[in-house]
Image 1 (cartoon, rainbow, N blue to C red):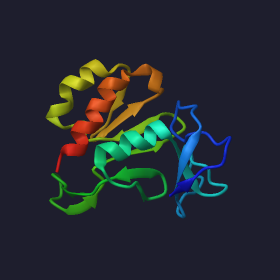
Image 2: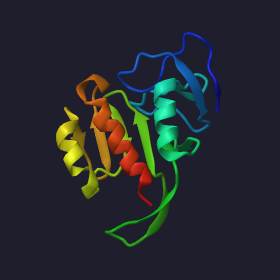
Image 3: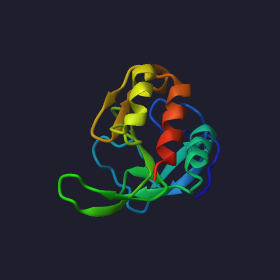
Image 4: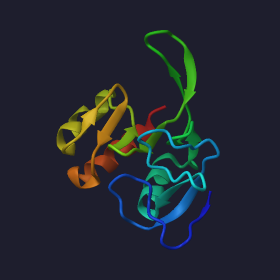
Length: 151
């Protein structure tokens, strides 16, 4: 993880802030709809996004594959197969179509917050946001904090 040169913007979809931190991604490649600068294979985060995610997990970020930036580590047991794997506690992936947040939206604790969040879509464990302006950032922050506390 390192500092970023002036003029580089945050990789998070819908964020126009200047990036202040970069995360190494030797595996990053141009994979269809991903918005990760592959010319030097680094994902960039503005101060707000970096602090928000680091504060919630109290962990340094880690690349999970070539497109997902994750924080924390938990054991996840698949309800379908019973297989147990290491997985991130929370994470995000800046994509061309939307921002994918891996915060466990199937968690019952998040149900009320999802109703107040604003315009979004959900998957099994993901929250998809087209633009940060479409959602209530206070509610989103609350959801991230709840997800970061789960074990």
